[in-house]
Image 1: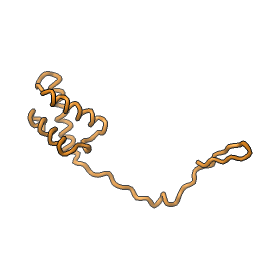
Image 2: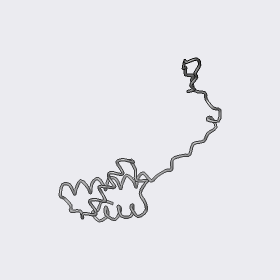
Image 3: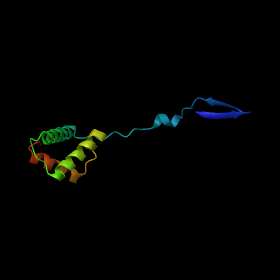
Image 4: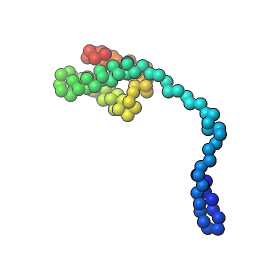
Length: 100
């Protein structure tokens, strides 16, 4: 909106539409392997649940790492932010408990 000031009075005019806005192109969101992310997330949830119900015993590192991964997944709703090292560590821990 544009602001106009004249003799102590202020009025607002509606925004103008720029023609260049119509010619913009959108960058597509990269496609992720949602099946693999889904498998990782399901394995993560199951492993944390089993640890909470004392069906399995996680090491201190595993518990902290998995809890951190779950929190970050909750914030981002995906694992696209994982580095290769984080993904490998997550897969290794889940495989250890038969979840991946």
